[in-house]
Length: 285
Image: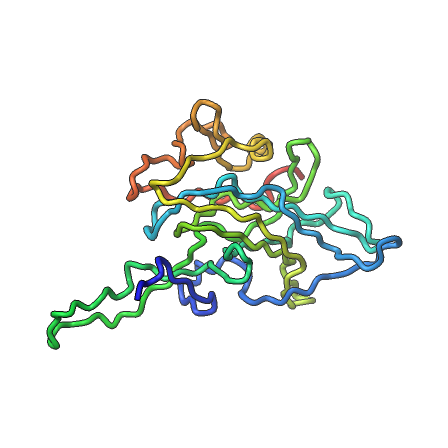
């Protein structure tokens, strides 16, 4: 029997470090808040939508130092309705308790791919000539996060490429360990208060299908989008590639990265670390 290249498992089976669980709790119920619009009737108060879809990435493997960010970085936009069902001016929205969490899914959107078994910890085939006295490892295979990086984003009030003010959630340092096709599920929630400690998902949106390549088949990074450039000029730490064959800067115009969006050579065991997350609440106020 041929073993699948990668074995995924249910996120509820993951027993990793509490520091890894930086997203919303798994299996959080989706309970949207509705308001009554005078023309459209009952409508959702919070509307989450994609502002920038990831296209591709190079797999980062199962080491802890190598990171290959999704390109372009996924960005989600939120629109909020008032009690009359009309969309509010974004600058009038209190964004400080807003969060969006990201999880990795199969292209069909029916299987969670956020947790994968490290293939290096799976027992190998037992040789036919192995004697009965040989020692067989009984260690459990190690489950690790397949979607690596900062999987939860606070809200940012920023101008887009058209100079319009919007509420954004930016996922600038997400990497995927395994090659293949995936989608990302984004879930919006309001951080519970002492008066109302209930936690639930208010709105959900999905990225389009993107491809994660092996090191040998990766076609290279795409050109930086106008939206990413707009964020960089507002102080968001986001990789921007210039036109001269992928040279890049980080919003502070640091010209020190290669075509993979990191600071290292293209060796599989390089020491590139994850990018630092943007400071919560940055951007325009």
